[in-house]
Image (cartoon, rainbow over all chains, first blue to last red):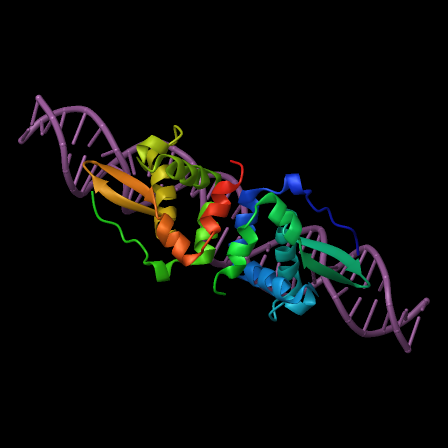
Length: 100
Length: 100
DNA sequence: GCTATTGTTCGAATATTATCGAACAATAAA
DNA sequence: TTTATTGTTCGATAATATTCGAACAATAGC
């Protein structure tokens, strides 16, 4: 497939991050990535169609929450923990600490 | 005017809080309330129509972020800091610490 | 009671998002 | 090269949000 544009730390916007995290499906993705380190898109669909998941991963990617790299035919996603912590210290921790 | 329903601490939902805060207008309201303690609706409109502001205050109220009480003909709004901190420790602080 | 002030609610128009099937692109493996 | 696998992109539809004017409700003050 192809390469994605990821926003740099200074381009990450608080509103976009909060919006991306306000969706239950995306929040579940983020929680999983926080627990398991990294995962492919397929590993995190809950039986949802691929196009829907692709949409959610894109929102997370463009908000600067997730980094996606090519890995064979699949895409490996991981949380941009350090970048998020650099941009908004404590935000991700507070979100992840909330009961899920 | 009339009394409002405010969600109890246990009813406050992370997704709703994140969503409410993801809007620039509402985030600006929250920042102002954090700075100045409390304010009427009119004090925080940026020249926007009353009905639009009323909408945004409602979203903040129903998410559990803001408490509104009657004060003469006007409404006094204040942040539910303690309740938010109780529900999601550190979340509000992280949001407010971000450059605005 | 009358008037002014503050905000809510209604209704409609607009804009944004979510969802999903189908077609497509890229890699891997046989 | 052919086939399978993984996701993306497109297009259409449905669901939600935002915006704002106008009408309304509640209080304060004259």
